[in-house]
Amino acid sequence: MKSMDLTILCAVLVAAVASPAGAQATRYNVKPMDFDLWCTEQAHLAYDRCDKRLPEDLQKFEAYRAVVERYEIPYLQEKDDQLRFNRDIMHNDPIDNPPQTDTSKPSTSDGKSP
Image (cartoon, rainbow, N blue to C red):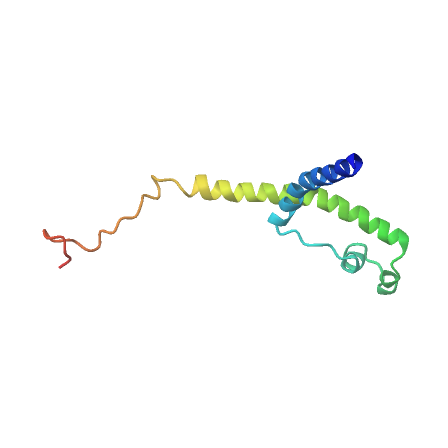
């Protein structure tokens, strides 16, 4: 009974640790890679060879995908940080962009518009 409880606890901990990484990846628009597109566009192999899906081609594709995925999330995070900095710091300056007030309609002494 203790081993089953321990197994369940370990499974819950593993799921808890793994879930932030999965949530982080879904926050960014990460497109899944396609072997057929990689084979023809990146590796420049013939269509017939791509259809065969040879083991060495699959290994090269997996290695390429691992490299791209390792750099894609940090790249998207940096891009997001730059956009946030640009929006919050550079274009949200209260001196250059004062708050807008409605001064187009003058009010009379009784508080009503003429």
